[in-house]
Length: 517
Image (spheres, rainbow, N blue to C red):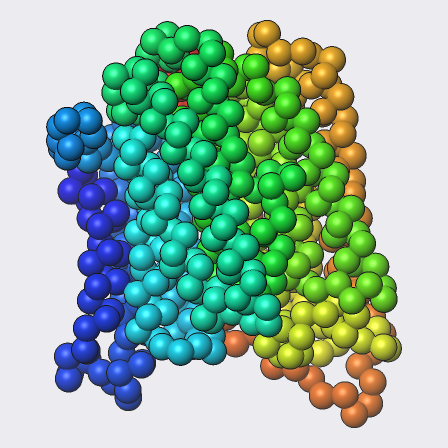
């Protein structure tokens, strides 16, 4: 199992290097471009299969135990080790990353975004997968930082070279925001490692902050939290996200929302909560306040974009919705309770499935209409997707109601548990303050339902298709193949949440108790 996890992390990097080499003559197919796209599908498919085998071989009776571990000395002078492992917290994120990357590679094989080079595209996609998987698997603070940074360059080029209008300014905004946040985060990680005498995340989590003074913990949480909050993104550090999503190619938006945003919240759970609990308790009310402001802000921004005549962009609206949804994740983390943190982890996975599907659908709609402008999509007569591409319209409506948290679908459980956690926060936190945050978050759920239902009414519903107005191409075979797993998992997670919560809860209990549970 330890070799399997190492292969999952390193395999995409080897695949990225191989993508830049000439294809063997027997594997070229119709063209070298087709060969490299097939290579991307093959490598990501193998990594997904390995991740599924890892999940099946995982000891589900001990999800709090770090499994499939590799621990090799790398830089002895700094006690930096190549330390890998997975538990009930990171395993679902590893599988989600492998799944979404494979679906993006499959989608790109049939619908390659316009850009300069298929070889570079596939290599960057695989490098992005490598960095993301490593972020969720490493157990050393400096390795975590390196993996965290690895994803920035491929995502920058995916936006800047294969994106749409305004792609270069959006790519620069993305890289500058995240790099500046990462510099501050590195200072916090170094402070923790040097003060504690180790960069090993398991040892630090077991120590549970006992080797760090309160002042060191406060400074570390502030520094590390800023870097993680930018990547999450937390209001008011979110402004890079709408531009990046609007300009990114479809697969770039899917991976950015479905995987990269999870790296920030994962860092809060894996590093900040167990390593600096006293410092986290100082900042928890402020984190919760920023979280619920983000929930309301994201919802109001979406309502403004959905209003007729506002020339709102569908991809931009979904991007702002992510600010609100990630606000619920941060609220759950800020409660510092098993209920809230489990809700945050569940909402992470649900958001990756649902918003990944939404961006796939938004890209398909834009391909068919030539625009993602909501006023154009609604049409002057109101005859929209139900009349012109009914299956596509039905899928968009399904994803929207899943995103608004309809009971029975994945989006419901995470937000509900985050609010429950706020109802009874950890000892030492102000219950009246968190009850206020819970009430504001509850209002955010109503606003979320409002703007998503407005989008469904405007884009999907309407009168009969006018005479002479052509039908659009409905869901194609490759689209069906790429989207069906996300639909199925959204339903499965909604109807059977114990599958995911059974993994995360023992690990969260152990994490919050300093390794004693």
